[in-house]
Amino acid sequence: MSEKIRWGILGCGKIANKFASDLRLVADAELTAIASRSGEKVKVFADTYRPGKVFDNYEALVSCPDVDAIYVATPHGLHYEHVMLCLEHGKAVLCEKAFALNLAQAREMIELARRKGVFLMEAFWTRFLPHYKKVTEMIEAGKLGQIRMIQADFGFRAPEPKPQRLYDPQLGGGSLLDIGIYPVFIAQSILGKPTQVHAMITPYETGVDEQCVITMKFADGALAVLSSTFAVDTPVEAMIAGTEGRIVIRNRFHNAQATAELIVGRQGPLPITFEQEDGFGYQYEARHVNECLKAGLTESPIMTHGETLMLMETLDRIRRSCDLRYDCDV
Image (cartoon, rainbow, N blue to C red; front, side, top):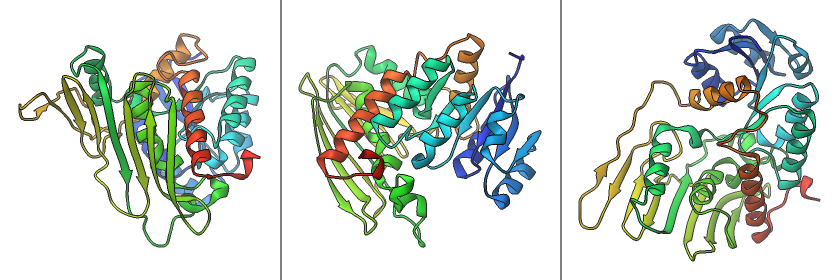
């Protein structure tokens, strides 16, 4: 493998643009190729980021010998198809969340990666962000005592006209897989696999969930109350409460611009400090993938296949709880 990891990006939407921008902050990475089936999007993308190769189809990208790793940035309803295509051609893959539409798809994707001996990781960027790493270190050090309650929300009022990717069931539309996945992730990453899951939704006319509220119980008795919505703006904050204090991660709790504060007893909020870089925050996960590839790993030791499968299993349980289904669930 060359000194620099040569990246390709599959899809040229909003997140792909942010990832490409942050890839410039990764010293041992270069954007080698991009591919999109939208001629207008790929032209604008190419003019902005100047990759060496530009393709108007995904088959050409995955067949390119000059690409080491591919970031899959298409809507999550297409992740299964696109990740399988990359893996079949032996390309390392960083797949944007939600990793797949259901657990069955996720298992197939991971099984193929293991059979091929190819690196595959879910692009759950929050896991690698400085503020989140600092918060988890404090929790693991016992700063909050025993965690008993987590509350997290993610909501915004969808613009008009309604974006297709948010409401089309064929693209995996709905608030749960698009943004509700973040509250679910933070609860599970701290408390583990829930023993009980209950959910209610407000369905949109297309059949997907416009709003979703989830309650979870864990083996030690801890509880989580989580929500997602496209109907209204919400604080987009996370509160982690333990027997010795609580941490509040302010708006937006999942991204690189978030701030966090510690509250103990009657003391006022104490800001939690951490180092922060310029950029959107996608450079951290890209650096980690580069490290894994250079070490010859096929699975991240931080965002493991097991964690991705546990997350997908819980998302399936949430959807079953409120009778929310996709065609691929059959």
